[in-house]
Length: 291
Image 1: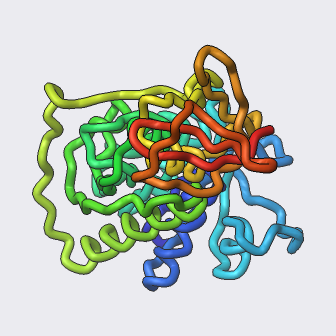
Image 2 (image 1 turned 30 degrees about the horizontal axis):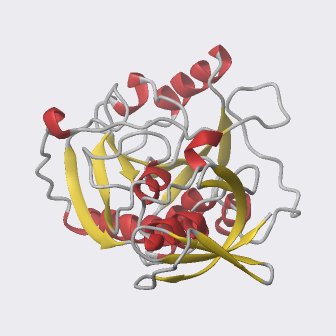
């Protein structure tokens, strides 16, 4: 196996889109490593070819392009697998897109390996495992992608490229993940063509970090602009399928954001229109289907 580029991800849509973009740009991906477990005893092993993968999946891409695919977990055996990879197949480039585990220094600090992580925010803002959720929850309308060198602490490495982007209003989580992954990977591909980087250390004084959201973080606040509530509901996926909101002390539970009227003002806190709740936010009105 040539050293080439090793792609590391988690098998989700963000990772899939990043890998697909690399392959569409004719980047030579020589190994894929995914988080998780596969049915074998080795901590680092080939995924059996079953030809029963979903059409839009990383194993399907691996089969199509004949790229070896490996699984690594965060156990002691998984660490051994990483060390084996670093010793046997040290990659020239390491590209990480949405991987949940910390990479061992033996891999990213290996001589001759250029290790980069794609993060869907303009670092040092919104470090952490789910930056898209928090940007929507905070009402951001502008976002971006960051490519940074991998270091021991997650999301803190020197930045080698960034690209600001607008968060399209009312888009689904899937559409936003595709947008950010594709744009970020295209920037990485451009770097590969010239390979001139000037890493800039992140400013810790303005850094922010958010962990994984919990159920209470899906609570809507009527002090938000209605557009923020609409974007948040459309751009995230509540594990319970519900978005609670307190209206005059009473708890209501919403399921689907239907539309927003940014300049409308009601005479009351909310009204019921058939099977739709029309709720006053600040400013604007949100139309949503209750649970």
